Image (cartoon, rainbow, N blue to C red; front, side, top):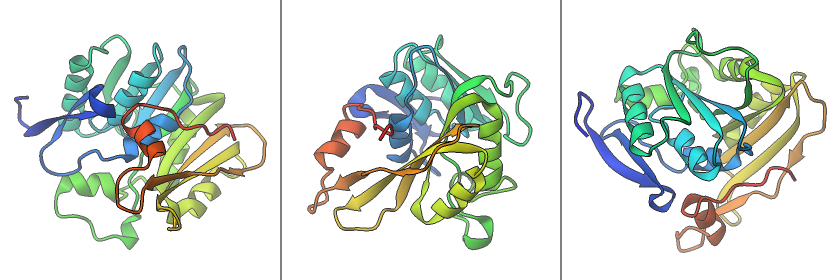
Length: 250
């Protein structure tokens, strides 16, 4: 791909998704794929991808759930351009829309309360507790700026219709902050941990919660990502390569 941002052409989901992404800076790993797999969208659902980057999560969800409609919002113009390239390259101009905008000042096209599902892969590190990477793209993706975790969740909940579902992937060591921000505003919370290997502490979690719904939290069995030799587990391969979904219904 040509353009101002040097990019590489990669694939996700075993080649089902074509992804152009910056050659330097933040590059999609498995987190967007896991997030997309955890979103139980239906074919008629309208889904918002907040902080979409180059669209990895949106594209993976579109590959798994036929006919759902996805809107992605991203503040970095260079990433928005790559996102739009990726939508066209995968043939999904009729299903995915990429918008330029910040969650602190959403684009006018985003109407509060209009989405069935919102998915968020926010920066993982609080600014006060992190040494920002030198590359600005990696720093923006990894370290919170003016919008902290609570602000990301506030935005996601505002965009959801009543009883809609917010799905977030985050570091396991910030689960307490995530749940605290949701308390009293969203319920029927499902927590799915990801273990690097069997017997190791979880480093990532997916949390799904329904807006304005009461119900107890559920801690699900979770997913072991790697075997002892470092290879992906069969369950992880099914999600990362074959495009299987993750069941958060419990």
